[in-house]
Length: 199
Image (cartoon, rainbow, N blue to C red):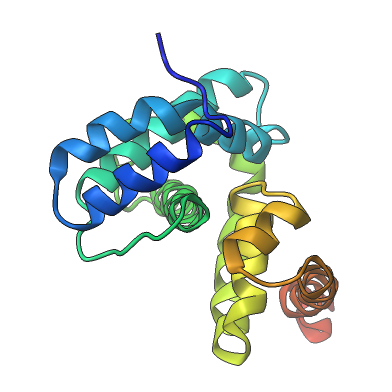
């Protein structure tokens, strides 16, 4: 049975994160049962608009995140919001890589090389949008990395404004302003060029 994350477990989570940061590999194994349900809730919110079997998708996404976390080194965590920020980055990378791989497979390349969980994470109607968002986020990050992180945490990890503020250690008002700005900026960046739409 998995432990749930609550206020009493927060200090223990922070302690395990710090131990893992210090190179204690077994700390991650003890940490995951404590944060699993929170990661699954985040993944569930992210996948909710994708396909019908959201529970299965969320579980697959969290499992992929765990496999990537096992290989993480050289990261220093001082609090759990930093961990969930890293999880958001990993979710973004997994979803974007899967979308790019499916796109390549459709064009005849990379046949059979889509991730093991491809059938679970597949969302063919959304692939182009996810890749376009990823490219636009990279461009936004070059101009203002915090605004790009706000989008990453809000969109890919499904964090609330308040959770995002905690993860970035800024005010709720700052996140709210960044979120509004970033949405408008990304909408413009992702809009097809007028000339490309003309026959």
